[in-house]
Length: 110
Image (cartoon, rainbow, N blue to C red; front, side, top):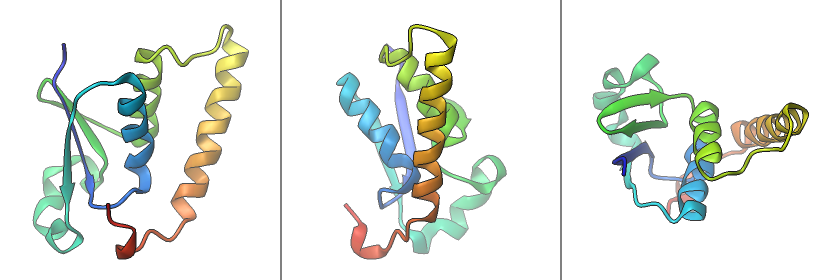
C-alpha cells in the first residue's frame, strides 16, 4: 500500500476535497499542516511555491485538482463513459472555482 503525505495550510481550503476523498476511501495518510506564519520558510521547498501537495511513496505531486482526480479514480468515483467523466470534471472545477474565491480565515482552522 502506498504511503501518502498531504501537505497544506492549517485550514480547509483546497486540501479539504482531498481529505474527504481519503476519508471516503478509508485510507490512512499523514495530514501535514503548515501554519501561515511558517509558510515563508517552507515555500521554496514546494513545486512553484504552491500547496497542497501529495507525496506518494516520497514523490511529490502537485495541483489539487489533478490529485483529486487521481484519488477519485482510486476510489472508483468515475463515470461509466467519457462524457460522464466530462460532467464530473466540470463539477469538480466549479467547486474549485468556489473554493478559490471563498475567504478562508484563521477562525476556520481545524
